[in-house]
Length: 461
Image 1 (tube, rainbow, N blue to C red):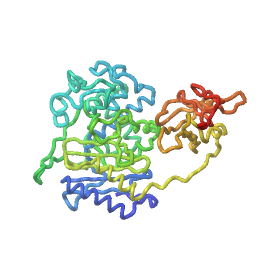
Image 2: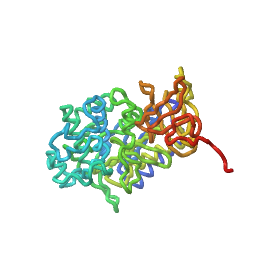
Image 3: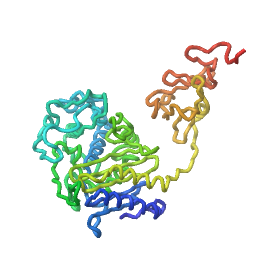
Image 4: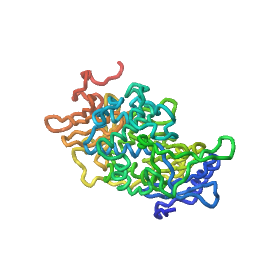
């Protein structure tokens, strides 16, 4: 167990609550072993483990198979290609990986599982059968690869991430695992994350559902399906990876790019307790808390990695059983235990060093029709526009070189906010996506669409 810095160390009551939660999960889920870690403030602040062998629990250096958390690593590689200008997320797959039966699907649709592809491969259960049964992409996709029209709905697809792995190989000209090691694992110092198991590692087990007996699960090499679920890792490596997904690392991906990954790109599948899917990341809500992360499973293993950006807390859970432990839900619980018991201490408020006088001029109340809104200038240089009432559209805007502002979040993401000036240089109104915001409700001196009654405001005679 690594000791957290004194100012990040968890309180004894919090540590016991975390230990109790994983102990209950291991006992009730009948997992041969379970290991977990929590990170906040850029550090791993807690590690815990439980095992069927009382005096021999695993630690944060023991590898487990992480299943579909591998998809998030693959998505990072694809985002790197985008950031280098080697592809666009709107590109059709055919442009970079020709000859597949899914060439019209876009890169973004594959990342967000909205390409309409089948959830699984044809033929034998791919997670438990030799990769030699699927030597080509045609064997992964089958003769009828689509279950839905591309772009119409979210439908989780393992073959879709096989295509993304092959896309990485086609653009880079090297095997997926080699590119991953060179561009992500190495720079982030994830030395215990590998495509093949490296001792010490756990064995995968199937526990009988109605009897306290178990049998070993086979560990198949996934071949072409590797980008969808091949990796082995540890709680320490995955906790560091979660910290990267929260804040970025310029050696791999910027903070803006990982934020884009955490932003919903397709809606949730009907019937699932999700908040949508980003670009290689699942999104979920636990009460009012928005979480980003991913679940993972392969025969013999379950895994969960989840983070709350607002709370600055991430948690990882790994267990070596095919079922019984809800690793993803458990990781979310660990995030909640820490965030609720020890809320994040806000950064100190600091003013602008040099406030832009033009932006200050825009701050204050504005009216869209009769609805009052506020423009606030934040210390990070962004504008925030939102309603005075509790409900409504709130967005943040970044300054552009031409003096306009570009929406970053919410309804106005991507839209342009422009201050329209009078001949004397004073601001007449704000123009936002055809909406006119004025300093007074329906200001008669502003070009309100449809015009303003010349008699102005009045009561009933």
